[in-house]
Amino acid sequence: MSGYEILELGAFGAWSDYVSGSGTKGKRFVDHDMTTQYIGVSTNAAAPGEGAPFWHAHSQLEELYIFLQGRGQMGLDDEVVDVEPGSVVRVGQGVWRIWRCAPDSPEDLRMLCVRAGGGVLAELPRDSERDMERPKPW
Image (cartoon, rainbow, N blue to C red; front, side, top):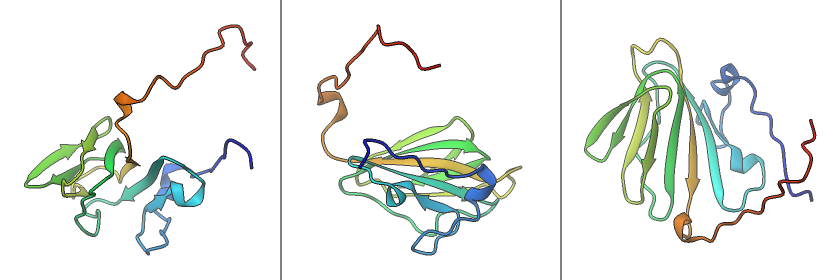
């Protein structure tokens, strides 16, 4: 097996048509379609007025919601926050969350949800090696 994989998600418009293995329309777990070790990613799309079918919370994972298109809202425990393209919402362990596309959004809501767990990232050593002399391939 190679040290990398490539998965084509398709254009934004295709995200709405995808149906996950659990039957959720507009949600795709990228980490179910390729081998990942430490992170999970899902693509999410919802038409105005639609959204996640249920609240959920994680005991070990944290999630990072990255909003790319449309306007919406997230329920976070007892609060509701507005989101739009460029909004990034970090949700820690034990926080209940749900999201939706605003009914008056001019376009579908599209976002990425990145999930990770395990050790605290800031406590990991710098896991990078640089080669300033290697020529660029283009």
